[in-house]
Length: 176
Image (cartoon, rainbow, N blue to C red; front, top):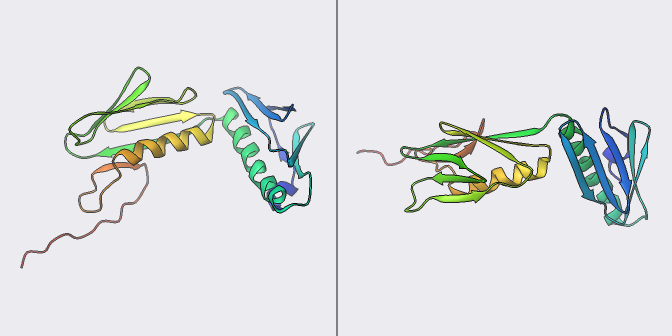
């Protein structure tokens, strides 16, 4: 069993409840729900959440650590939202938020439009896009989907990268 799941998880100011196999976490910044796997039991006490396996199977033991991590992320997300920042590099490359879509102009013959998930807020400045939400999974997945459109290339560094990401650059051709 996971070491994470052996310790009770403190909930702080968040309100955690489990009913009919659905975990609900409410906080100042939002409400998150997650379906609980049948082989995991979640008990909510005063100020703490305890996750235990229902049986001795390998899957149940593995899922206790996974759900412990999910609960920690949900509690942290409803108190302070998660944020990812994407940076766009390249001449003539642009990104903007139009309505409920992120529109990217990244050197293709057409613009690329990606719909913003319901629980994510996106703001675009010059060449940077900031995504924020209480749900860590949706922020990370949407940021990965945007980056997949034009990942940074190793010669000039053009493309979409995360803030703080280091791109290994290659030297290119040498003149003789």
